[in-house]
Amino acid sequence: MNGVRGESMSECIFCKIVSGEIPSNMVYEDETVYAFYDNNPQAPVHILFIPKQHIASTSEINKENSSVVADIFEAIAVAANELNLDEGYRVVSNCGRQAQQSVPHLHFHVLAGRDMTWPPG
Ligand code: 5GP
Ligand code: ZN
Image (cartoon, rainbow, N blue to C red; front, side, top):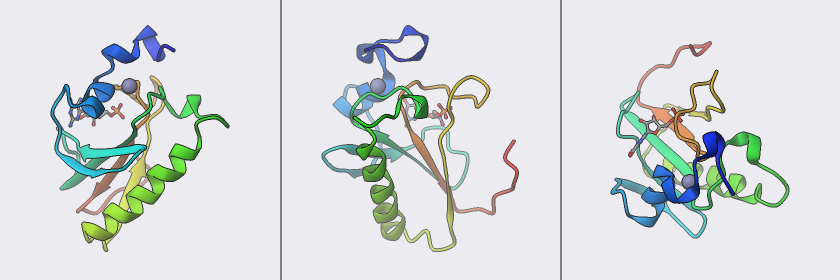
């Protein structure tokens, strides 16, 4: 299965992070979910939660693979408690060109540690 822009899973940087081929700063891991610090943080706390399985974006979530989305949100709750994000946090998933998705492997940004604005840019 190919991701958006025809990128194969073997070329996907987040698949390489899951396999350990590209190093990352791990925050959380279980059977289906991996979370690590974003290397270009947009807030004092900026974590990416990804499925270990390659799914290109929110547009490729379906009946067969959607249970991992629940797994990810359970993982977010665990990590938010462990990291004491008591003041709140924002969960964002950019999908496609207009939303400026830059990595075609489904990911949920968790941003925390500062006041956010709304609407987002
Ligand atoms: P997007 O723009 O697709 O919503 O988010 C992709 C995110 O991945 C960006 O915030 C970017 O900083 C982060 N990112 C891209 N490559 C790497 C990497 O190799 N390591 C880490 N830790 N983050 C990355
Ligand atoms: Zn991937």
